[in-house]
View 1 (spheres, rainbow, N blue to C red):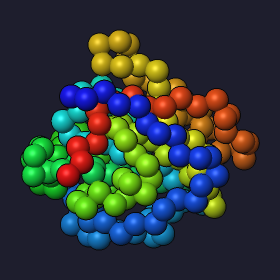
View 2: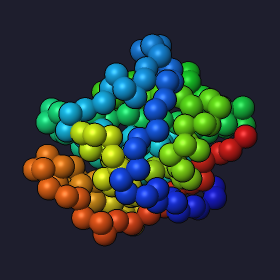
View 3: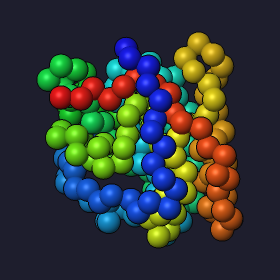
View 4: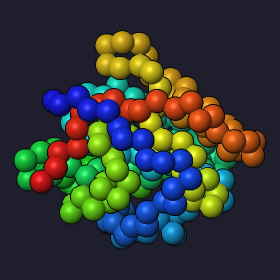
Length: 183
């Protein structure tokens, strides 16, 4: 495991578009068909990372709550499945079903989407407003494995601001986690 911080893409950046296979449904999806009129959360995650394991249950809870409020969640795995087969599409589908992901879990095999988003680690969160402008990027919360219970506090604060039509605080912290496993 290589501990890495996210790069923190510039706020106001337009969400890079993508077309990727959803490992849960088997359908190919695009960002444009999933975009929300409230906010769209893009989460770079994977199956094997202990930092993702730490937040997974709370992430599902947060996603369930905020999807009812019109926010779209999309999870992306960009890890090299040749060297990390547990992060490949078959295992992604299995993990998504076991954990109850009710959002697409797409596979970025050629890693172009991770590069476009400047994603560096798992988990790494990007929240875009209704115009697909970056309003929040960084961590889920301040906890780490074996260092507190995941709350999603920082992601939740950003989502609440967008729901209320308020600006998201520019005080944002990079995510810390396992490096994306590049080819």
